[in-house]
Amino acid sequence: MSTEQLSQGERIEAQAFNRRIEERINAGFVPDLRRAVKCEYFYKSIWRDPQFARLFVGQIADTYLHMLRQYGGDELRILDVGCGAGYISLELARAGHHVVGIDISERCIEIAQKTLAENTFKTRFGSLRYRAISLRQATGVYDVVLFSGALHHFADPEEPVRLACDLLGPSGLILCYEPCHEEWRMEDAAQVALIRLLLSLTGTWYEPLTDTNIYKDQAEFESYVSDIHMEYLTERDKTEPDGQSPHDNSSSGQEILAAFRRHLIELEYKPGFSFIYRLLGGLRGSDKVVSGLADLLAVYDRVSVKNGYMKPNGFFFIGRLAGEAFRAP
Image (cartoon, rainbow, N blue to C red; front, side):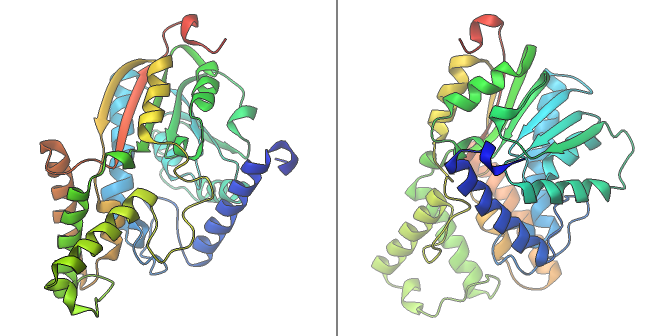
């Protein structure tokens, strides 16, 4: 893909993801849920440990596959928009689907292709190919268009949803997992603050707090809660100058849902995770202790969202195209 084919904003975004994946790969990151390795380069990411990745990314992939079986069937033609290094695309193909993964980051696509070439899990494998293009450049007819953490990088999700609809065959599906940070409350941040401080007190959190006043001073604790709330809303630490990319969180979950509901028949909306994606990677200690804590926190996240103890910070959506009336004019 020539960078001239991208808009200025897309070029800046692609460059950020090129740098990000290059740094990760050089540090030993393996973008494959089944071949992932421990990688201490990540200080708080779920990719620090294969178990953490399975508890978050693996659960997302499993939910996609469940929804596809329920509403689509087998051996579907899937376009994975913003596929990154390809770990979701790879799992879909391993389940027998025929996948095209696209991304504006040429380096991500190169890594995805290399990872695919090294795949040894070929039983029931459908097909998978990657292209370094934008959604505007995509062609073909698909049964499913997937946005897996991609739509919130668009300032106006209406355009990519329209483009996706135009790539679907009759009764085609759009499937996503996207953030809804606006739903996450200060009450949710308070629970995460308590969990982190308890972990820190027991030496099982990556960041030992030197200011012990936070444990006994109400104002300092409230300030810590506020910092965590902002961290989850922006997906970056207080001291972190940049987020994932320049256009990260350009649209909200509400805006994305509204665009879907204007163009699709909603089949299912399912709340996602609340907090583990910015917590599991921060666990420290022996393998046995960390593994047990990770499982417990993942269960608490699911139970909390299910029963309303905490708000989700992401959501699944699947909708069906309903004939020509729902296509872009």
